Image (cartoon, rainbow over all chains, first blue to last red; front, side, top):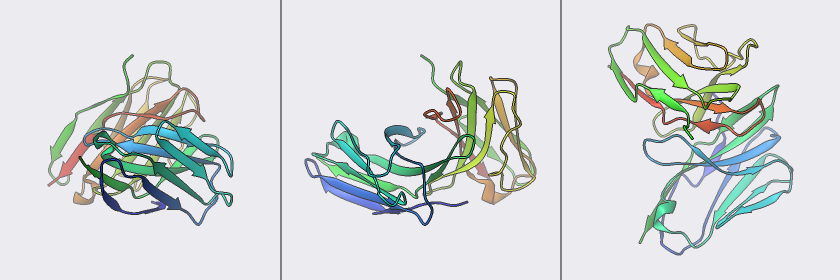
Length: 112
Length: 113
């Protein structure tokens, strides 16, 4: 099935550093979502974006819905060890329901 | 409150056998989704249920895959004549309504030998 282009594929950083990851698509989406997945768990929603150009923060997380509606980025500031996990972007199209297309994931490792 | 639960947590089967995976959505959630996540990949949409409406099956990869849901409760995903390429984590999600936030279960890890 279709997957979005997400980069970087993985990151290994020091605690306290800022992190940035992004997602691009050839298709337009009505919604952009960012999820975090811990090992053995399902994804958990971090931030939801509903309008082109929207910039939203959730604690140390900031995400933006690209103006073209074909891209989004997620920033994590002052990373901590519990930020470790896999981060997925997802584009949503409302075709009678919120049909999500997921990115390939960014694996984040944080060194204390 | 209780989240989405799935069973079994892990399933190992032989090629050619049928498997049945179960999802218990959050109580009161009318929408239910199944996704497949292959190793190192993102989630792929499989099927969507909303109340008593006909499901959207557009993501099912072949006719070996089917799913049922009884009203607004439990759903089962069945894979017939399993193949090695069916090995993946199968995730279920539910939401309050058709455009609401999806909450995911922990998944069933399927390994086809």
